[in-house]
Image (cartoon, rainbow, N blue to C red; front, side):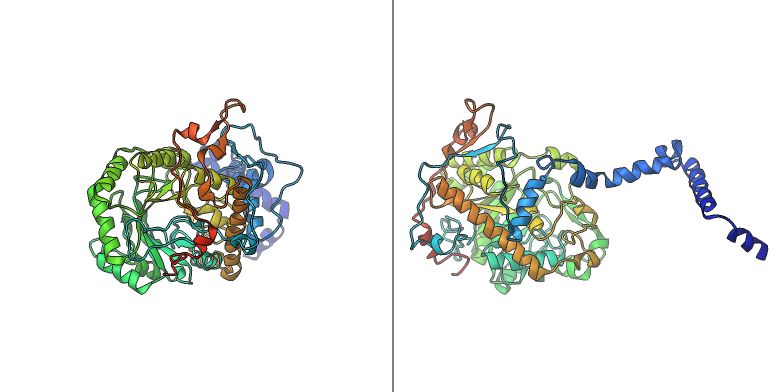
Length: 517
């Protein structure tokens, strides 16, 4: 034994390296799982290492400022700087290719809108509520005017971490916005004082009956116990994977998540593609009206847009009966904070501008555009894109990934792996500990305030008081050169319906603003 120990101890360090490499080489040759490692022992491992860190190398060293997707470095930098109240300006002119296809131009007025001394914007340069009251047309018992035109989109507790959800809710309270729960149910982390839009899908989490269907009793109880819920949103589909359900693995269902979602601990939970509560458009309308009647709240629907036949059926029913959703959230096919198969994320449903334009035009043709509050969702968290959205007919926008970035997301694109390095999209307790909800909530609020301030300034530059006044002719998009560029009305083939608007002060005095009533 001593002889063996002495032999081992006398082996030089460089010889140990050779021995280890020989063992790895033998292992590589014997295994058949990885062809590259088998054919190129030892050296083949570098290929897998480079592949693994490739996204990081491209993000920080290779890609230029305008090259990355889904959000390039300039876009992320603007959100980060805005959230931290840092200098978000750029010098020496734009580095964007302003002749590129689909580039947005906002037609400014010769003389901008003048803010008088007694105007709300004179004292608060970030005050920008929605110009429409949700639920007013259908005379819901509890109408709601969102206090902000930019709000947090549907992201569930479970998909996001507890501290991330807490940060978002505290942030919307500071910013006077609302927080959409996502379909994971109402959690304690949604209950820090911010206005909430309760959202549910085919899994009915939070309002789930024992058979996996919808429970009206639980819905009524939820609304009664949580008066900060201002509206209810029924998800028909989402931009990342429209028409596809999902599975929540049993391993991820903690006792807390099980209690919130109304499911069993440790058991896989299926969210099917279809709803149990309704199977056709007339039943959907009846379902919406039943919830609105029982709760008194405005009820809307969220969907990604593709075929329009059933949307036309919905519009016809609304015309005939005077009933239907109070708001419609249009999700773009470019959206998605969670996990989705590439075939769905890349190809199913239309991008926001195409989908929204098609849907708005349909409802406008039925003279329904005035009674519906249209909410846009799909990479609209930048003032110029928001101006285009409002010119097309949007009344509010919801942001998801932009909100995540404001509280620390670095676009690692590992939301589906539970290894989010910033702690935003993971249930890993260690990774979550990097989030300080007090600090991050301030950053979300500051991002919203900076967004609204710049959006107001763009609006004033165009000669208007509120973004609802934008017309299709105020925005142009590149088709080729300027002689071929088209205003939005010519690009998408309709004129936006005029939104009734009597001044910002009138919105400020509204009894339904921010759910005050």
